[in-house]
Amino acid sequence: MTARPASIAVAGPGSIAVAGPGSIAVAGPGSIAVARPGDGGGAGVTSQPNWDPSGPIPRSDPGRAAWETAVWLDPIRAVAVVDSLLGQGLTDRDTLAALAARNTERPGGRRARWVFDLADGGAQSPPESHLRVRLVLGGLPRPIVQHPVRLVSGVVLHPDLAWPEYRVAVEYDGKWHSDADQLHRDRRRLNLLVGAGWLVLHVTSRRLHAEFPAVLREVRDALVSRGWRR
Image 1: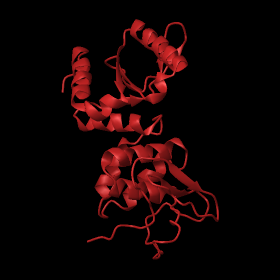
Image 2: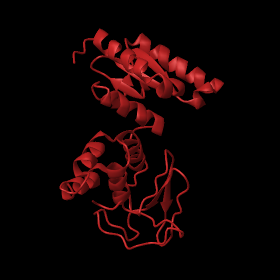
Image 3: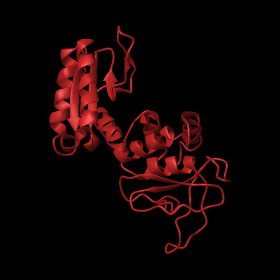
């Protein structure tokens, strides 16, 4: 049995704490301590010295953070964390691909490769990442994150998730969408997308967590209505 690494602290969904050169990042509940590239950490997976559990959490370079996240977390949360690492520029796809190739025979290697392949730095928030992964795990084709939709007016819109070949889009409405100005912008974008022939579905935080089977069914029906065949 392989012992669980002690170089990453993941207690639940949250943010990534980034340490600068020569410093220690102490990760709070639900966060990950990550060292910026170039401060002495490599992208390979190597053994870590023992550390005092009562002391500060050792920082982890982004490659190691991505690897350990992919191996140890459930896939939905793991992809969201790797999305964030990519989105912040803390790592890139070439680094992740090389890391997966070097460690493919290690325990969890295939799982990590799957997580890396599904990750996308264009995701705007962890819930959007969770929604994307759950739709894929539910058997739907992989959507494109922030796909550019250019209208005849020249305006370019970027729906959260899109299947451009079927002109189907899904927008995730988090808590910030209750803001009046944000709601105004969202509805204007929705009207423009619909006017351009897109079928747009909205998923709220409550529905993502409490009604996902219905959400999955609705998105599947929308894709089928536009020509998708499983």
